[in-house]
Length: 282
Image 1 (spheres, rainbow, N blue to C red):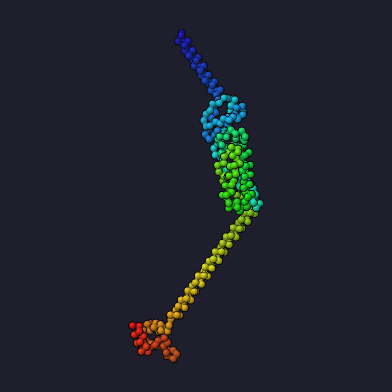
Image 2 (image 1 turned 90 degrees about the vertical axis):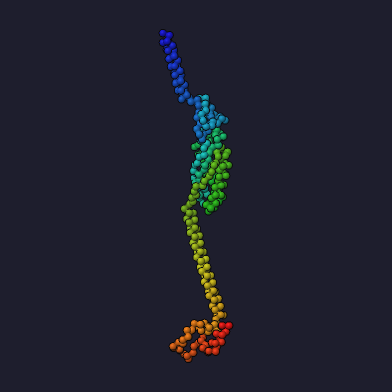
């Protein structure tokens, strides 16, 4: 009898603990006395809707249900692309596509949420107007051609000014990229015509330079030929011509002699020939 009574008591206690555990689990699910902050996030603590100075790091944190709530904010680097219209220094319409890498300062996540809101409110309320204003201020200082040719300088100016502007909101700019510029159709046609004119001018300059070089080469060749002919005239004496004719003579006279029958350039005087051969041998 006592054994049966003891088992009944044990079963009652077990059922009571089980029921209590189930009730606690249900209460935990409903009221959630803890908050989980995922990787790359920070938890903004609010008590009765009022933002507290405490910021929760990644992990699980126990809180007082109903009284305390936690809002998670992404503090990782995010990239958003924006388009803004502006006017250049020479009053050309410029549409700029810009990509901005940014993130929320983890140490100021509570102030950012309190003053601005969540990520979407940050983009629409802070980033978009700030980027538009900074772009307009930067492009107004340069002509349309300078915007294209001085792209790196323009990017640096936008980067610096945007960082200064967003720092007061607890937003950090990691990098700025100027993705694309687009101008009016009239300006694009003018740029294309200018490029064609520059290419044609370079081609004409090349042709003129080539013609000048070829003319100079002809002059140099003519000078060389004239100099060679001059030297040849100076060296071709009657004695040399006679010697060359004798050296090439095969000992036979031509069978037909025109004119008065004389042989120009050939002196067949035996005495002169003998004296010339003697002088050459010496």
